[in-house]
Image (cartoon, rainbow over all chains, first blue to last red; front, side, top):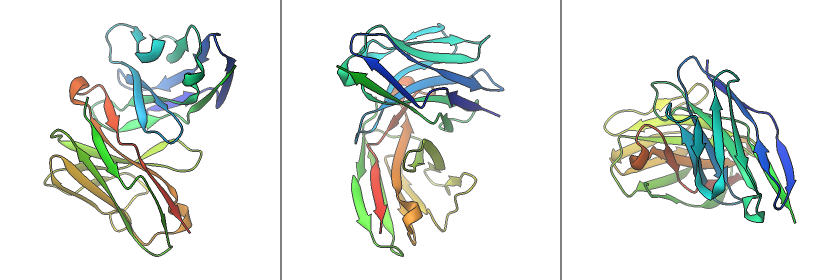
Length: 114
Length: 116
C-alpha cells in the first residue's frame, strides 16, 4: 500500500536560514511524488514534482527536493527562507496507475521568524 | 496550467440542509476529483468524476451523502447532503494538469463549509 509520512507537523526557521521539510514514502510502484503549498485561505499550489526523471527536482520560489530511493525520502529544501514562505506544505504520492488518486501527507506548517 | 473556478468560496449552512459546490475548468478534462480537508487535517479523496458515467467513490464516502454531477468535460458539482456539523470542512476539486499530464494536478481554491 502507498503511504506518505511527513516527519514534522511544524517547522520554525528564521528568515534567511535554510528550510528542510522531511517526507518519507512507501510505494509498491515507481512513485510520482509532489510537494504542494497551501497559504492561509488560498488554494493548493504545486511546488514541484518527481516522475522518474532527474532525482534532484527544482521547483518554484527556490524550492527543490531530492528523490532518494534507498532512503524512500523526498525532502523539500530551500537555501534561504523568506517571510512569504510561511504556509502549510504537503508531500503527496500518486498511486501507480491511478491518475488523481493522490495520497497526501498530514502536512507541515512552516513558520518564518523575522 | 488549467484554471479552476470553484464556488462558493465559503458558506455557513444549517444542519439538515444541502449545499452544492461547483467547479468550472477552463479546458476539457477527462476526470475531475473531489477532496475533503477536515479542520487541521490533510486532504482525503472523496470521489472521481468521469463525464458520462457515475462517479467512483472512495471507501467511507457514499453517493447518497455526496452526489456528484459531471454533465460535460469542463464542469462538475458536488453536493453535501443532509449536513451535520461533522461535515464542516474545506472541499476542493482537482483536475489533472494539462501541462503536466499524468504528473501534476491543479486544485480549485476550495469551499470552506461551516455547518451550524
